[in-house]
Length: 198
Image (cartoon, rainbow, N blue to C red):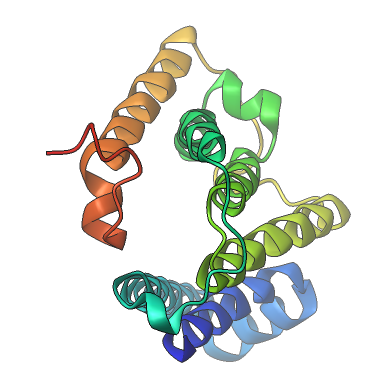
């Protein structure tokens, strides 16, 4: 459990820095913008790796991860369905499109959907810590973004063609299919739809 907690503190702690413009700008001024971005990226990567390792380890050793409640089966199906728009919105945060412009901050919406879906479908302590932390952070960050006027990784919204919307949806569907059929079990050790996986 401690590995998961350390990963969450590291990853979410690093991502709290941009929500505090004075702290972020002070760090950039002190070490330079390039080194700041490199350090931010490295710490984020280490944090996410530690989170995945910690969560995966707890899934393999249920005795160290108490079950707090038993979610009904329908919540798993709901979670699988909710992940489809989450994946499309995640892709929309990285590709200029009308979907991205309409949703303004698609990555934060994707994180909220992902976290809520997994909270509904899992009743163990590790899931509560992981998905509850990300949901709380996404809500906080959305409030912070509104106050700061931040525009996300693509900057200001720009005109885009219908082709980009199609691209976002196609890539989102492909990512969704990969996670459903292969990725989730490979990364976490749990198949979301056991009957569909090899």
